[in-house]
Image (tube, rainbow, N blue to C red):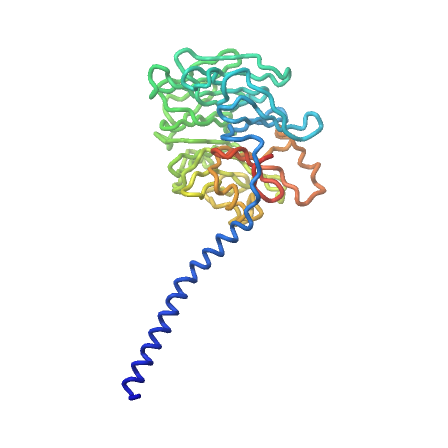
Length: 388
């Protein structure tokens, strides 16, 4: 074999070796991705059948009871310790199907669609907790009630005009009647009271309005004009609001300011209290609707109980509401969260006495989350799963 043939064979061997290395290099990330997929499957909690199926409503806490139902269902579920046994019970609505829940701090108010068709007829019904009975019904002629919120001991409702589906009104229940507070506005999407007693009302397209001393402002508050608000809440007296286009609003420093996160928020918001800091407010949990299978919620860091612009995913760093980021991502993180609530202590009107669990260092109060279509979920014993 001459020198030219030897060099040619060496070149072929070198090219062959490089080709093999290239194939292995391409397969390596695929192998890692498969390992990641298999790992995610291996840690995913075994799915349970939810006690409250379908699309649960928002949650209302009043007089040491937590209430929730299924949208367009006919039963309301109550999580309480009234009989000495902490757990769930249920009772039917008078007729029709269920919309949303709210409280004035004393009783439960429920949006009911008597015929089962939201645009045909609607009622604001009161469930008297003292007598465990339905005792009042309200409606407004010419309008269909479509949303319900409680703030500052008052009940607010969003209504759609029957003759013009593009026109909405804000209603208020004054303990005697259900009255129109404002017409020609956008759909009401939330209500929350600030530390000063001022109540802020969010709308889907007209921004945030201020209700103070019996008067609703004629214009949206500065910094929120035309905002498409999907939810708002109070955080230690400050107001935080979110819209469906990835904008977060806060008046923690005075007037409303905002940041753009690029995440589509659902309007689900709740303050999370950390056992490690003596149950002080540490996070604001914020429901999101992502792309593909990436949903769940985000965590806003609270600095000394007040809102910040520090927003991250559960499990990224302490404090956090989950023990395992991977378990969260493989379970609740695959579902849009429409309502979320850490079960409050009895001192805050909830059904639990936190300090009765002081001897169990692993105990945390449950977090309940209403998913878009997979029932009510709960965070217990370090993992998210459907609430049984």
